[in-house]
Image 1 (tube, one colour):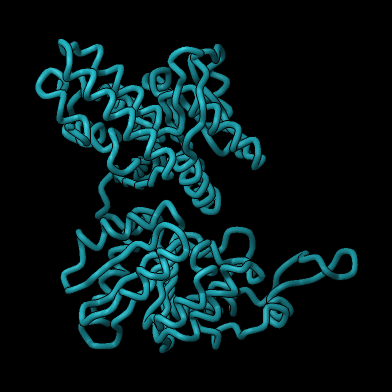
Image 2 (cartoon, rainbow, N blue to C red):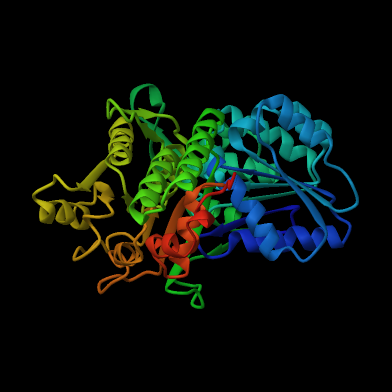
Length: 443
């Protein structure tokens, strides 16, 4: 290992890269090396950092997730100061737009989570972080897949970390490690000097895989929080208030409560149905955007992924997104007859990367062990459905530890459902005991 102000934590999903980085940041803070920490992450992960700091940080800190309009984010950043470790968490898109404000804030340390987001040296977010990386005293990248397309992916990420490793010129780097050919000699047709490239990359890297992390549990549950857009939040709050008022005025019947909760769940998934025309209107893309990022992470790691969703409107939106990006998938929902062939494609066709399944129809009997990662886009109120869905990838034939990612809209029924399922309860049972507890607002 060479001495450097920076480090690459090349850890696969679920192996603790967030915990490692919080520990390193805490140590540097206690050694009075840093006072301001900037964390740049995909949008769907920014809230995760808030939760992880609460669980693991055993030192004084103040953390703000930069949200809202740019002006509001900038104001939050300017007001972030004090003797505690000051932590600002921002998504990649906002980071390059706020480069001047961040430079004025002068972070002592910058962490790029899922750093493959800056693998393209020409991208605006990459260039911004290259410049910001020169301001900070310590830099870190977190990723399980530093190389997603070819070995040249190292350059931009390491330019942010420590320019002395591979230099500052992409063209010099490419000339050293790539064999050019094709029309005009502009196409990469092969690679050279790869042992040297690997040695330099690992000179400041710490690599950990799931197989190496023998103390990991067989199943890891991960929550990714999403924020409903302002309009979607307003619609959700109004429906919640109306539902509570209506239920409070009459005799409470379990079926009626579940119907109201069902409507709230549909909104968190992005859709609301007109009561008269039965036409569904899309009101949010928060979960869909988060799912895009997760699928990108999995494909970058050359992993297949299973996605479970409860509602047909959600499944239609997911498959439309996959088609848009040219990602091949298998699909099982109520109207799919030949389910065996859909499973066979996912299990055996290397080009079929995603399995999309409706919770109610894929809960039992299917083997989806080609993937060790499942995403719950939405959740059923039935604990048995949930457990059966999890067992699709965690069964005989699975060679890896399994990761379950839950997309949860903050301050919505999603949190109530997740809490009930974690306690192995059905929502219907809670309705009998205390239906009011399922609604955020009780007035």
